[in-house]
Length: 404
Image 1 (cartoon, one colour):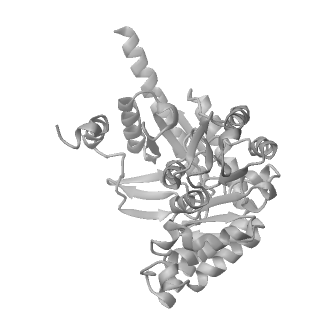
Image 2 (cartoon, rainbow, N blue to C red):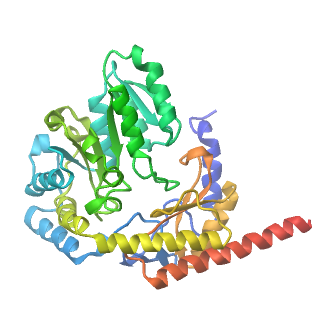
Image 3 (cartoon, helix red, strand yellow):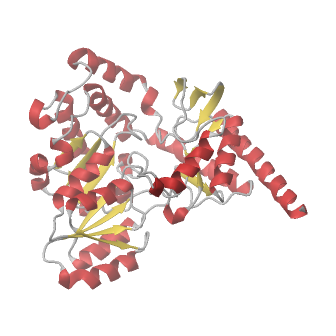
């Protein structure tokens, strides 16, 4: 027996992937020519799995800000803000986000993952209760573990289930209760009924935290997210987001309508005990913020592509996992079928995400697309053409099995 035996199911799956011409787990790219085009394994590929929702990674204003920051401040911060101090763009980025969201307390972190650790693991302790959506992101689960608070899960996107859980545990909590949801769920692409969740939280007098990592920049007025689109942003207690998607940078933030939240920075382990965001990352996110705020044209293009791809996949015989959103996922069957299907899409010039258990809800095997405002008409045609070839192959294989 070895320490690796407990990983055998995963290692068997990974070994299968390694035997393919292109490994879907961490595929190497040799060049990027635009937000939606890259070269990999000797092929020119359309990118439909990058979460680059507004296409800002190649925006000249964002690139220039990052380059200027390197010239002014160097390549790295070499330590945390608690130890090494804050750079100009760290502070001005927090101020800009606070103004945009209408929340007085904003803390910028090095990644979006660390934003959830900073907020949840700091706010909750052994006497508190965390009630989270069953399909929450790994960073939320990890933050709950770090907090040492009791964690309870409710059925995905189900306000009635949340109501029942809060009623059940109400008398046993000596501290505070925080409900944790997401705006747009990253695997299936489904949107939370945020207004309903807020009503349940108000009924029970508990706090609510929303992770808008995939929805910020995409939903709501000025791209402020699902809570804003639902008209309840001012009733959200805590808000987390990331710069690695719509903002075209790297980093994250946590925000709150409670002023004391910002004073907890020294207690946030993922803020205090890790290096601060690089000058280039902070400057890029700062430069992206006004583009996101004023990006109605970008959002219009993104949603147009999302609806077109969603409808096109349905016409090809695929059944998307949720109504139209910038994330379009289709369930594909077994692990082997998923790997083979992903490989065929690569051969057709299309890169999407292959998502397999245990990283997916309900142990689903998914081909996951994320659309971008930068996708051209030709890009969308390539996406649907590649899935059309995949549909024909799947139909042919089904007929072959039926004949046997």
